[in-house]
Every structure is written in structure tokens, then in C-alpha cells.
Length: 180
Image (cartoon, rainbow, N blue to C red):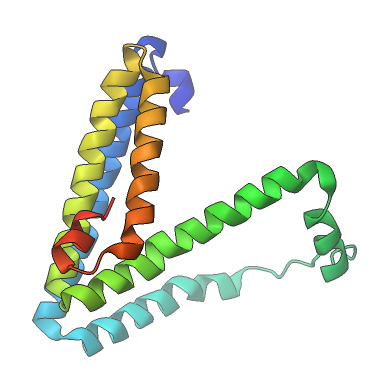
């Protein structure tokens, strides 16, 4: 839908604006979560979250069951994962999954342990989302003027340095600043 409605000359700007709007709406989650925890406490917030998740899952019990393919087994899955022509895709998918788990689960948990409060974590996450949204929006403008290759080269290098430096960061302010 997006590609059919976008303007080719301003594709970077449009993608940047879309990401900016998405990030701004996602920024509200840590802030609202922090307000909720501050208002009713962590235990009640956790219980409320668990109840909401259960209520969200409950409608799935009313859908008819689906049968798995009879050809599906652990042996066929392993054979498919080790299929030589697809190996580059398999390795890159595994790498992306690991990076995503570290970035979304382990790193926020580490920041929370270093900063020591939910409010600080919410502030850092919100500021990181805002900075990322603004940079992406700006990169959209730069990509429209023909600097796509330079953007990819510079920012992939910067991101690699940030990830490598994280192993040596011990001060809470530096850890918070490395949040992309």
C-alpha cells in the first residue's frame, strides 16, 4: 500500500516521516508504563499486564484448531535449516534474531540494573526512541538527495562501534547514552 501511494522522488522523506510517527507513538509506552508503576506499584502493574495479556489471548481459544502438516518434523526442519543454498539466509536470520533479543530484552534489563529505577529507564528509552526517530527522519532527507550509500556506510560503522563499546561501559550515563 505504501509503495503504491509514495512519490519516488521523496521516498526517503516519506519513510522517515512514517518512522518518526511510529516512534513518537511508541515513545508513549515507557512513559505511560512508568506513570502506571509510579501510581499503583510494580506488583499491581505486573498483575494488570498479565490479566490484559490473558484477555488478549482468550479469543484465540474460540478459533477452530488447525492441523500441522504431516510432513513437518524436527528432522525436516533441521534439514531445511542446513540446506546449503539457503545457508546465508539462515545465518543472517539467526544473527538478526540474536541481535533483536539482546537489543530488546537484555540491554534494557542491563540499563535498568545500572540506573536503578524504572523512571530512569523510561526516560532513557523515551529519549533513545526520540533521538532515533529524529535521526531517521533526517536521514530520509539525505537519502533523497542521493547520499544513500554514504548514510549506510557511516551509520552502520557508527552502530558497530557503539555495540563494540558497550562491553566496556560501566558508568550509567555512558550506558544510557549508548541506547540507539
